[in-house]
Length: 602
Image (cartoon, rainbow, N blue to C red; front, side, top):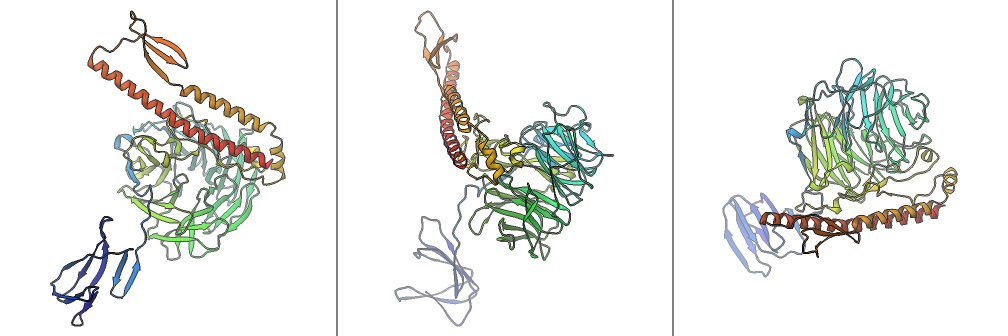
């Protein structure tokens, strides 16, 4: 132990850990001109006079780590939390892969102003007289033609745009002209100005600021405007101009700032200009929960997947930017709150339910913070931060099915940089050495097929999204339902479920057909030498049948090397087929489980 000589005081004492292969510690003592006494545990004393600065190495054996904050205070060092996403980093696209020369809108509305899907990227643009937005092919990078055709059918500024999650060629927009319009985008992109929408929704009395598609039901969209109303619309009607919404929700006392659905679309969370968060039943418009907390003034709110939690961004009572976590069943007090900084820009939250990662991007900031969310305390775990000198005005997000899984990309932003008229793609990447498909970071994700029709959802049925695999080469129609175990919500749903005769038989027939296709695709093709001495062809065995294809044997070293590479590629393809079989088996097991659950609810 240490004893102090001549009544002198310590400047600072603390303990650092050595690597795991060593059991000793470094005790670093920064002192003035002091004399120290070091007594070993056996009682024998050793004295020495030391001059600052001093690094005293004491080799001690500890069972657990201690951190010495002072001579009379010790605390336990918190344990290291391992995570596969701890080293995620942001990789901005090169200049050639950005969208340059885009006239980004100068609107001060706090929306994303950008939307993306695997085929197109749309951005609200600045224009004189009316409102418009630009739709570009996702591969149309580089300099954008200033006279590129636009979607320009609104009579006022466009405030929000959202792609249909189940149709990559359908996009919705809302405007200051108090209308919502649904547009059909041609397969080859916008080649001329589009002014006539597919559907026009007229029901708001003032400008419309937000739109949101239902996450699982087809042809259902919600809109809210400066008349404090949230309107529910269905699009599978013959009229081109729809004036009567299905439902009008009037529970807000001010302008709605954000809307968010839970996974199956049975709950709608909103944040309002009155700084309150509300949880609403979107079918009936019933207010289920409402915050009354004065310590957090919310501006944006987001459902966190299946965690039954809400995340909000806003300001504390001291006007610091703040994030807060809420239990969706109890909004009296936040479960977690953290102040970030003193800036004034709105914080946009983005949540990836597959990796449980939360991204926080501030309007006018150049940085993006990201965290990992867990269902246990302390809930929010800070990972790291992406920093850039280019401030973002808005952000678009690519759906998971549009990511590059070969480079371990787990999220992709599209930053709107107004000072350079630039749209910069930003990929969030998990560093991995292997170039093969990383199944642990790409679980089954929401696909592009609706789980139910508009009539089914309005009648009271709740279903989770249809899931799909991101493995390259997997079929997009290999969808399984995320949650069929949820019971019917009312008698109307029960009657609807009982009317679906032969459901089990149809599903089993579909599974058998898919399994047969998988077996056909997975049958290997073997290369056998020809038994005919006068023939120089190679005999192929495919699906149990011989197929003779004229191919001369390699004659040079280069041709032999190419043949070797082809065989290696064939071996790699067969290995991928085997891996796909494993994934398919898991999908079939999940579908069978869902069928049993649905039969149990009948």
